[in-house]
Each structure stands twice: as structure tokens, then as C-alpha cells.
Length: 92
Image 1 (cartoon, helix red, strand yellow):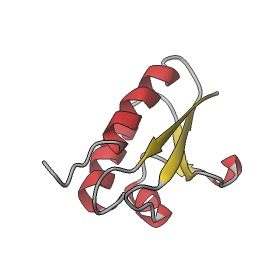
Image 2: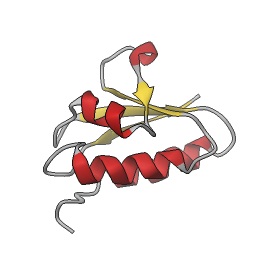
Image 3: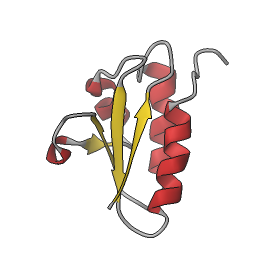
């Protein structure tokens, strides 16, 4: 299983526009990707393609989250998703 950490960069955290951008990217993958706040058990991770799950995560700017995926292309997919989370989409 591949795993990456990312620091939330958007000023509003993982809500509204940043969550929609991230959920869309995760949903386009042929992998199941999960997300959890750093320090939470892996079995409590949520579906990264679900905007409702992302918003209920309550991740604010500066919070660290853990992304996990398994399968062919997981490393590359997680690298792409980390870049999305570490971009301040509210500054664009």
C-alpha cells in the first residue's frame, strides 16, 4: 500500500472549492484512495473521492492528512493528489 502525507494549503482548509477539486481528481482514478487526518487509525480513513467525506474531515489550513492507495499507479496518483492539497486554490 502506498501512503503520502500532505499539508492543507488552501486558506479555507479542505472545504468548498478545494474539496471539490480534490474529490474530482480522486474520483477520476482507477484506484480507491482514502484520506485521514494524521494520527488517526487507517481503518477510520474516508473515501477521498467523496466531497461530503472530505468536508466532514474538518481539515484546516496547515493540517496534515494521510492519503493511502493500493494498486498499479498508486504512487503516481498519490503524488498528483498531494500537489492538489498543497496548492492554495483560494489564491487563484
